Length: 373
Image 1: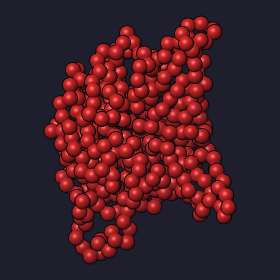
Image 2 (image 1 turned 45 degrees about the vertical axis):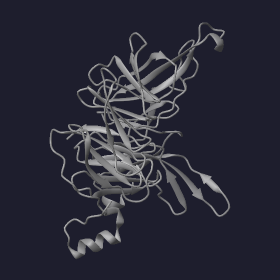
Image 3 (image 1 turned 180 degrees about the vertical axis):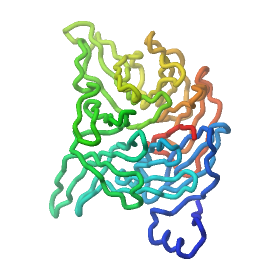
């Protein structure tokens, strides 16, 4: 992909060469108010904007530095995409109209330190702050020293050399997270924690590893896709064994799929089984128009009736997809992750209705986001 330079002046050209973090991609057209878009990232360093009216690539911007994991969040103004990339070590803000990099922060804060975030990136409701949990390690001459993980809070208008406004020590194993409308930050780790971003104080919002559900095994959770939804919920899947009696006989147990969810508007949480465990799904999402319908994807696309705990339909896929997303109308499902294509399915029939080919390589473990400008 060619690089273009905004403005065309020698001074700006020199600035771009001196600081590759502000390099741009093919600028392409600005986004249109009222239109629905999807962003998807892939190798070598692409941030694609897809037009969901035509199910086509609208434009492509360049993410600075090395790629991975490509976890994204959309700012509340719907103008800036924030990306965790550079091998899990840096945060970037990309203006979607100009493709300019307008924000950059390195997670490592000290000489001799390396720091990585495991998919943890979230924005405050007003878009003025961005959050990530850094997992730092000091590289000594003959050994490594693992440091406590820390939440790092940045101002989104801090430019291309952003430094944390505040840092707080947090529990280990934090991965995905989202901010509630009241400003609280919900972080998924051993449990789902609710944190005050001004004081660093936190409490358990949803018990996961430490849940107390009679006749249930501890849940198993694998969730690395930090999705913003039209439903304004923070959700992730679990599997568990449900025993018939206190003997906890694994041979007679029922194995179930379920979800943890926090309503980001009200703060209300929910832990709910939705079906029998017959296969693995990497992501699941409820319909934006019918919260009783749960959809999951990995090697198949599946639809469940939550109240009935019943599989309604399933569709075969050309290959595995990691990440599921809905348009606002709830009529179409977009499957991303893995290779460099997005599969489009009808949400009612689960028939495939299209494929969007992305320039570049595979998406790896990237998170797609759908939004309306």
